[in-house]
Length: 359
Image 1 (cartoon, rainbow, N blue to C red):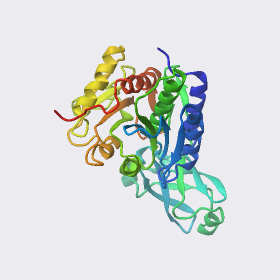
Image 2: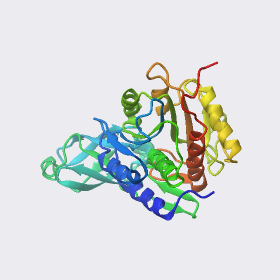
Image 3: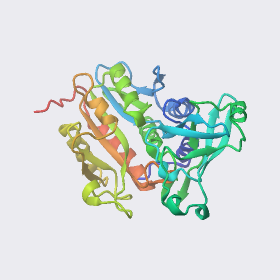
Image 4: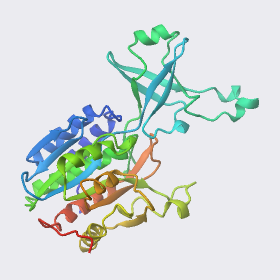
């Protein structure tokens, strides 16, 4: 059962290529709301930018499906007298991949181009030969000769910047890009809304399709919107690590592989009855899935929803991803398709007033 259409895939690429750094997600949220609007009854936005849409509003039983909209980025932290920029993380940005990357710096005057510079291999001898990228030593070059010239470009401390890399398809099999974590989750839940609309599915509850902000700095958007909606059930989608590439210890990080289906997680925050409902939906509709476990916290918005409002039955459906927090994150097309299918079928197993009491 193929879900993704050429039109929806065109939106996916537009959405992935649009910058949406943590705390500055507005442009991406506008695109997402515009795409989902024909398939829902109403849309809204909270004070910090979490976007959400509602199907069948006004019911006394509320179900959330959620992804997060933000991507990792950097803040300008210090400008040297000779015109170089030093940065700090905005989210879990990986300094190891930064050298030689092109960046977009967002200013009041528009986008300014820059690069992460790095000493040439010929100059790294002696102690410098062991030089490794650290947040303290990576730097941006914008081609300026002085701090004054940098400031005249509109760049100042606090400007946010993202990598320039754009999304592509690899071997007609993988989506590749810098922001699949977790713009791809927002895409999946929007596709669920489209399917419900096109197939005229009548849900016996209010469904909130939520695209949260600020996940990359501690699940903050989910914390806020959980208090606003006060859901009875929450199904979260995020990415997880494909552990079948070189240099990853499967004994430590589990055994998950791209192309083998979405992954469901066992964890204290994951409600056992809701998880079983999702597994039953997968088995009934022959949707392949994988399993993994988290010992304390999932590290996703699942935790924020689960521990809100006196406890909200929550579960996590994850998309296997290669090379997370790099500019070449990779997700298998079949897995994206099956994440959408699994959420769609799981929703139809939830009844109004569904009893998720622990026992």
